Image 1 (cartoon, rainbow, N blue to C red):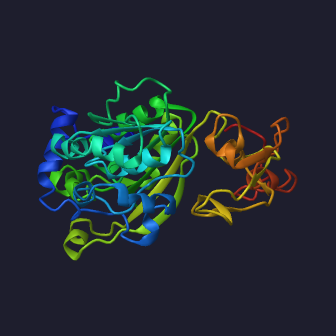
Image 2: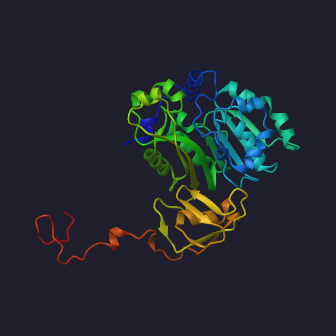
Image 3: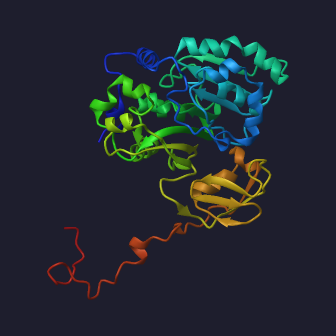
Length: 365
């Protein structure tokens, strides 16, 4: 199956035209379509207090509540895709500090104008001598103004689902990320494919549901682009109204924060090289453990046996190496980290019978 083609919505039109149509269909209340959780833990602790430095109009015209901001952004170059009025852009600008940089990319001119209106004021509020924020009107599917392998972290807040060409979106994120860089974002996903007739309706997409991707299709597209091991850090059931549920009968939605590392040192399956990592416990929001994904937490100060897709966090070039150390050199390969049951549980050839109770012969056909 051609997964990118299934989700592509721009035949005969431009990306910009499609995004303009979505913005027009979203209505006057910017937060009416918000799908991220409006709760205390929806914004990282180190960013929550920095909300006070962001202008009220920016916050009130932003389209989401939570914020997908990973730790250890100081000094990083960050791209915020579909940044809207710029709330997350200005939060990230404070987290990267004056030595870092944030590029906010927004298709809609009116929303971007709000972010631009407060640029000088925000930088002054942060106490920076020069601006570390660049605001660009553009689309995620064409980031040609950003050089290859120049970005440490890419973020987006429930806007990947709006993309009219998700294959191009993923490919551009992969292209601009540095080796060991990270794509960290929150979005709405589904437990099955939305029928194309339903997702072709721009009004459905504008409500942040019609463009949601079947989570396994996202994994396939991401892996095809070179993100070998997508991880899901936080998952929450996405509330839908009775009217919305009627449009998507039998389909379940979840709002998921995703972590994708751009590393050729990872693989599409968890493989064992006998490596261990130790998290030093120094992240302010995570003194007791490092949250790798929804199923895995690494206790502070404890050596943990991990697969190759996790040990990359502590290797040279990854910013997480500041807080995570790795033991091992990948000189010996031990196979599947969980034990390869296909091989290890295979019966001996002797006395193995086929469905006709005849001895199985070694043959290719």
